[in-house]
Length: 637
Ligand SMILES: OC[C@H]1O[C@H](O[C@H]2O[C@H](CO)[C@@H](O)[C@H](O)[C@H]2O)[C@H](O)[C@@H](O)[C@@H]1O
Image: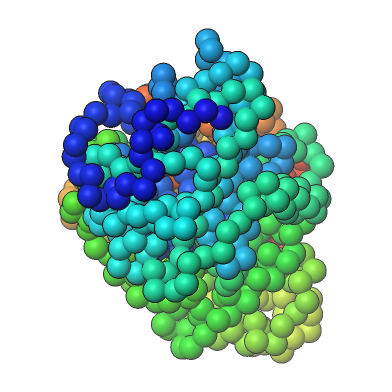
C-alpha cells in the first residue's frame, strides 16, 4: 500500500474541528443503491448491509434493534456510512460470499488493476467488530475510504479524535474505534483517506463498537478473525442435512436465517432493517427488527427441516420465556430479548429510502390481536417434538393454557397475519390456523399419551372446521375468501392444503388455488391480497392503508407449494425456479418483488422469504412431509 499525499498530511487531525473546509465528494454524483444491491454480514447479534458500490449503509449497534450508526440506507451518506471503493467510483464487477459462509468478497476489476475487499463480522465474543480487508490482486488501484459515523439513526455527529494510534468517534452512550494502518483525515465532517493498493497488499480496517463510558476495547487480529469466522460458518453449514437439488440456495437461505438470530436469547429477527418500502415513495414502511411468533415459528420449521435442532431448542426456550405469564397477554411479537413494549415512532429527520416516508422504529402491530399466531405457535411446538426435540413439561403446560385461551377467542374478529390496520374481520386464514392449533394439540396428546380434555378439543376443532367451510367459502366462485362475506381473496389461503385443513385434491382447495392464480398473480408472482378490494375499509381498503405494494415473496413460494401438493409439480418447479432468479447476486431475498420495475421491495434480508424458499425446496424434493407450519394430521370432513 502507498499512502497518498493527502493521507500523510492528515495525521492527528480532529475531524470535528476541520469542519466544512472542503465540500467536495470523494465519489461525486454516486447514485443510491437499490434494495437488491445489498449483501449482509452478521455477528449473530446485529448485521451490516453493504452495497455493490462498497458502501456499508446500514448498521445498528450493538444489536439488530439498536439505533443505527450508519443509516445511509434511509437518509443518504449524510446519515452515516462507510465506503471503501476505487476512487474511479461505480459498482463492483463481481461479488460473492466465500463458499458457504457469511464472509463477503467484493471484486473490483479496473483498467489499472484488480482489488478485492473482504467484509465480515466475527461472531460476537464481547464487543461487535466489523472487519474490512482490502487486498491488492493485480496492478495498482487508487482506492478511497470514507467513514461517516452518525449515531442515533443519522442524527448525532460524534467527536472524532486519534488516540494511541486508534481513530475514535464518541457521542452519548456510543463509541466506535477504528484500527488500521491507514491515516484518516477529517474533512467536511467525514473521515477520509486515499490509498494506492498494489498486488500483494493487504490492508485491514477493524471497527469496534463499545459503550463510551467503558475502557477502550481490545484490539483484534483481523487475519485470525477471518480464519475463525470462515471456520465458524463452514462448520455450521456442515450440519445441514438437506442434500437435494437446490442445495446451494437452501444453504444460503439457512445461513441468512442463522444470521438473523440473536444468539444470546435465541430470538429471530424478521429482517435486518426498518422502513424499506413495500411501495417506493409510499408510507408502507415498517420496522422488522423484532421477533414475530409467526415468522419465528415458520423459521423454526425451516431450520429443523434443514437439520438444525439446537436452534429449534433455543427458539423454544426463547418462546417459553417471552410468553410466560397469562396467555391472554400473549403478544404477536416481542423484542429479541422478549421485551413487550415496541412503541412505534417516526424518525422525522430521515427522508426515507428513495423518499419513502415515514421512517418508523417500533411496531404498533405488537398490540394487535392476530388469531393465527396461536395456530402457528402450537404447530411449531408440535413440529419441534416431531423433529425429535425432547418433550418439555413447561412447554406442554404452556401449550395447554394457550389452547384453553384459543377455545375462548377463536370466534372473535382479528387483524390477520397481514396485520391490517383497517377494521378487524373474521379472516378465514386466521380461523384455519385456530383449527390447526387444536388439531396439533389433539395429535400430540393422542400420540404421547399426555393428559388433555380431548373430547372438548375435538368438538371445538370440528366446530371451527364447519364454520370456515360454511361462512368462509364462496360456492358460486368455488373459492375460500379473505374473510367471512368478503369477495376478496387472500394468498394465505394457499396454506390450506399444506396445514392439512383439507386434502389437496378437495375441489374447494383446487378452486381456491385457481382463484388465487387468476386474481392475485402479477407476472406469475403472488400479491397478498388486493389493496383496493374492500370499500368498507377505513381508507377504502382492507388494510386501512393508502397505496399499493409488490408481490409478496413468501406467498409466491406458498403458491409453488400448493401447486406441488395439488399434483402440478412441473408448474411448481417452474415457479420455484423463477423465484430463485429474483434472488440478488449473493442469494438474498427481501420481502417483496416489484414485477413491473423488476426490483426488490421491503425489508431485507427477510426471514419469511427465505423460509419460503427452504420449505418449498423441501416439498419439491421430499414431498409434503411437514406443514408450512407443520404436518397435515387430518383429512377432510
Ligand atoms: O404490510 C402491513 C404490515 O407489514 C408488516 O407485517 C408483515 O411483516 C411481518 C414480519 O415479517 C409478518 O409477520 C406479517 O405477516 C407481514 O404482514 C408490519 O410489521 C405491520 O406493522 C404492517 O401492518
